[in-house]
Image (cartoon, rainbow, N blue to C red; front, side, top):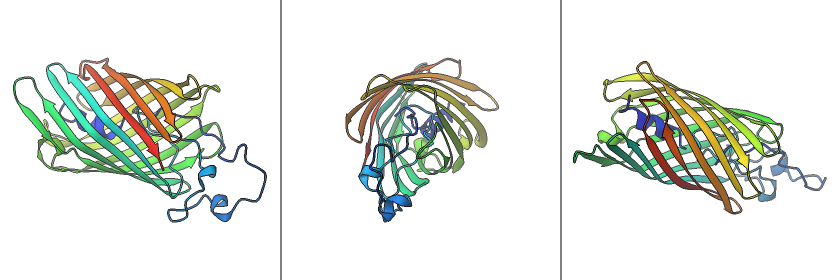
Length: 280
């Protein structure tokens, strides 16, 4: 299981869930231009004053069901993600989830794992490019209004070769859901069904990922989250507890960081991650 776990975690690029808000709240009651009325498109971007609330898929594992506004870009960058599993260390640097809004309800995502390094503590060291993910997020409801939101996200894993990037393709389906609990508390839930190549078993295997993440707005700029993650396969069950913080440094720019602790024997013992999200 551990051989496939870094890939499974890479699929789940670790800002907290934000309650979906009405993107027209507070605007004057005037006839909007056509691009705002129909939500825009890839080549007709939504005006910046009509964009929906900033929402991202990192740093928690639970993905957001909210898509990037049509015609806009969002970059979610994992500057560093370190994991310790007994004597084994793993480090991923410059993981980038590049998103572009295609329609009012869809965005396209390409997740690049720029550099992954693993060290088993005995002098054996593997490093190289991690696999690439291509994902499509399709919001079903709640993108612009309502207290709940849901999306479906099919994805394909493209191997980059070698011991780190792998040689086998994979894929799956992610279903994220979010709901407003109170004015300052939100809940994100996610179910994910993966088919990934397990190098140890030398075969493709199914994995089921389920998560629950509570997000807390501490102030207008600061937030925190507490999350439980489970990854089930036919052999092992990986349980993780994640805690992190986010801070809005500027409009459309958020820094994040946190820690990850294993709560089952098959899980990595400890992890630390740091990153940011920027929207354009």
